[in-house]
Length: 357
Image (cartoon, rainbow, N blue to C red; front, side):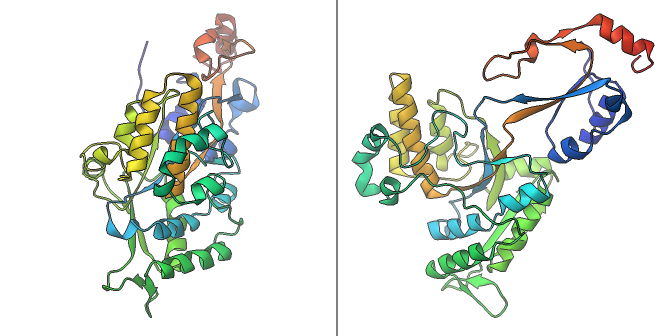
């Protein structure tokens, strides 16, 4: 094997086009939609395939830090979530290639849907007095659907009402303050520019409802330190949750981990019902019980609005030089590339044509 490192994604993509390496998985919608127009693709030397991704998509989102006093009111979190316009982002920035994430266990049998089964309600029933009635009477919380205009005026009205009810009043300067005169702020931080084009329109929408929102690009060392010490308002991250959830849930969502530096509880959620449901998941003795209990946990977490869910693509975007063969079918939960093979005759033919060296 030979390992070669590239300074950035642009350099790596140029190397693929030149045949420096032969297999590439694309993760950027703009490149997948517009970048594959180079000569070797037109000549059939490079192939593109879309391979279905059967795995749960992972929990990627803008995670709000509930340790901050201003985000402890659910109405504030709901107002913030209303101002992220996925539909506009998908059409304008993502070329319509993504789907909206609803669940922490998106794309799995553990995703809460609708009003839930009798078995799921039975798991939640002991906590009825500790949970909002909507957890039992309404479908699982899903992100609001926006218009494809950059700013959804209906959502602006809803968000303004929620913030007024929560005690955040807009002043003559267009900024909201509470009764103590504290400004409602929300700063996004990241250690790379990839999300900047997505976050900045979100920031603009948040300013429309009087939130003093901003985005700051910081270096990776500072980002890591601030993540581990929970020194942020909102953070963008993705967790790939296992197919059989267990003790790792304590690190992600438990009250104990909320104040444990370096834990993965990035939202700081600390709720006795969530703690109890985590322990029930861990104690599940069969697959059916596990799925049901995770659905109950998913439903409760989603109702709390601890994040603004992002998106997923539901497939693998693959580009490769035509020197491989592969079976028609692939195994579940995998790309199946471990079952591909190299075909020397194809390689030699491309070398003879001057496509490869």
